[in-house]
Length: 251
Image (cartoon, rainbow, N blue to C red; front, side, top):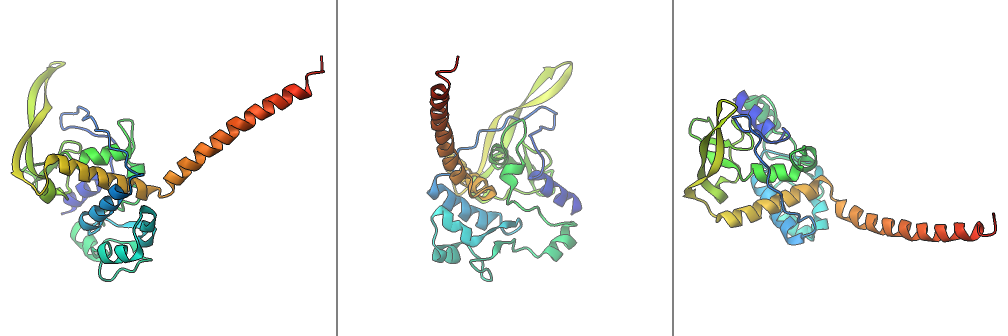
């Protein structure tokens, strides 16, 4: 059980993406939707329904979801559990003592995961977006699941009911005298509740919510930053002309 939890923690805790063969697995570019209120609301719903049972977001309060266009009534009725209040932080429903007894430690907090998992291979959003779209069935693993981004992952596929099941195809490639297995494509398996296009869309919404949650003020900061830069540019022109006027008679 400790090995399973270790994989669970590392699944969202390691930077980059590595295949079992040692080759780097490329990260897909996550869609940018942090300004899309509908996407953020759908992402919040997915987070509460599929992530919050094990992973807390202890730096985020439910009432902060007002910033993505939700009312207190909508938050209380649709996104909180029975004992949660609108001003509470988003704590996992799993009992910490039980989690520690079962796995040896608690699953990691996800409040800042979209910022902390950035690497040279891509942003933290790219990592999560690719990770959640790279699960496949592997009966040899204790959980029955594996992942191309993080081989031997201990965390089972949290969204498998939505995506369904599939298996990867590999081709053997000779490289520097060694045989490597390169990813070729997917073999469809049991269908999920969504088509692949719908699933990718929903994962994009979930990742957008994780991005927003990691820094709720980022959109306001960017908008303010644009005005600050415009002001500085205008002030630079004024200062340049004033300087020219002050020194025009000095030879």
